Length: 291
Image 1 (cartoon, rainbow, N blue to C red):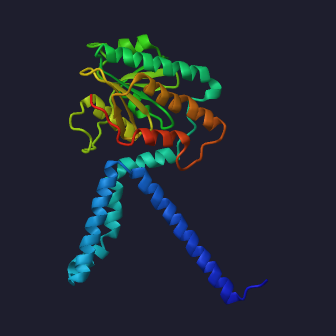
Image 2 (image 1 turned 180 degrees about the vertical axis):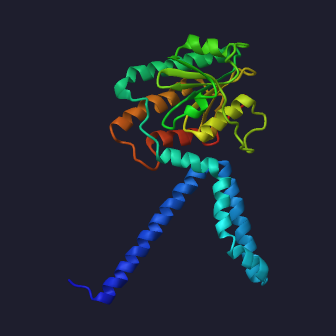
Image 3 (image 1 turned 90 degrees about the vertical axis):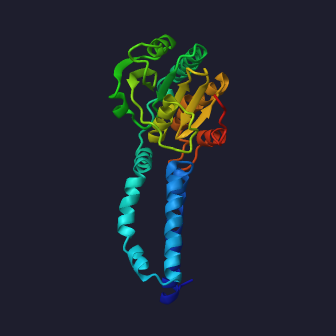
C-alpha cells in the first residue's frame, strides 16, 4: 500500500502535532505535579489568574496600552518565574540529576534495618523525656552544604550518641543532625526555615526548620517536640504530627530499606510515582494531628 505525497505529508504533520502535544502535556503535568501542595502552586495560580483576567479585560474594553504592555512582558515574565520559583526549580533539577542512593541494601541491608531501629528508639526516648530533636536522613539529594554549617562527627549512628547531642545545654543540641547511611555525619547544622505561610502558625522553629530542609531536599526529617513530647515527620514539604512508634518504623523502613531493595532490582521508574511515593502520598494527604 502506497501513499501519495500530499497524503503522506499530511499524515506526517498530523503525527508530528500529536507528538508535540503529547510531550507538552507530559511536561506540564509533571511540572504541576511537582509544585502541587507547595508555595509555588499558589503563586503560579495567582499569576495565571491575574494575567488571564487582565488580558481579557484589555481586549474586551479596548485598552490598547495595557494590551501592548502585556504582549511585551513575556520575556520579563520568564525571568521573574526563574526568580520566584528558584527553590522549586533547584529541587527539580536536583531530583532529575540525582545519583543512586548511598543506602544500598546490597552493601548492608541488615545495617539499614539496624539504623531504623536505632532512630525509632532514640526518637521516642528523646520525646518521652521532653528533649527536642531534629534529625535529617539524607537520601538521594546530597546535603553537603548543610553539613558544613555544623560540626562534623562522622560516627556510627547510635541511640546514646543522639541522646547526648540533643541533651539540653550541650554545645550541639540547638541545631539539626544529618545522617548518611549508618553514619551521623554532622550535628548542630543550620537548616532553612520554611516560608510556607499555609502551615500552622503555631509551629515552632524546630518544626519550621524540618519543613524547610524537606522542601529543599528529599531528606526524611524526624522532629521531637520538647513542649509536648510528640514526634513529627517531614517529607518533601509535608508534615505529619503526632506519629506513633510503629508508624514511624513503617515509614523509615519504606524509605531506607524497601525502596533501596526495589532500586537494586531495577523496578523503580525514572519519572512518575513509585510504590513508596504512592504510600507516602496517601499518608501525607492532609492528616495532621495536634501536638
